Image (tube, rainbow, N blue to C red):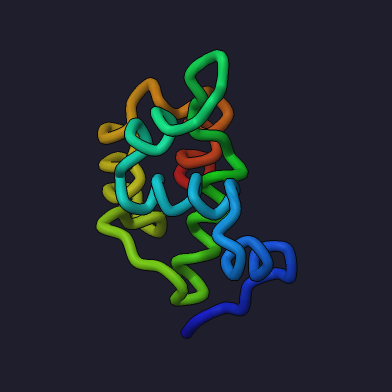
Length: 99
């Protein structure tokens, strides 16, 4: 069963803004190509907000992913794929339900 997006999330989905592009990059496993296009002075890491929005997109049926956010094995696969691209808070947020 799908869950509706919050209004801010729906706005990001409709406009494909920066926040949406970051979440989709996580879902597709394409973080490095996405941040290579940004004009940031330092390399951006995946934050909790990126993961939360990615998970909301999956729950709403607006996007798909090879990563499974609902199982321990899926979370471990996600952590292994991204490694140091996940900031410390994002790493903690991912494993929190399994502690």
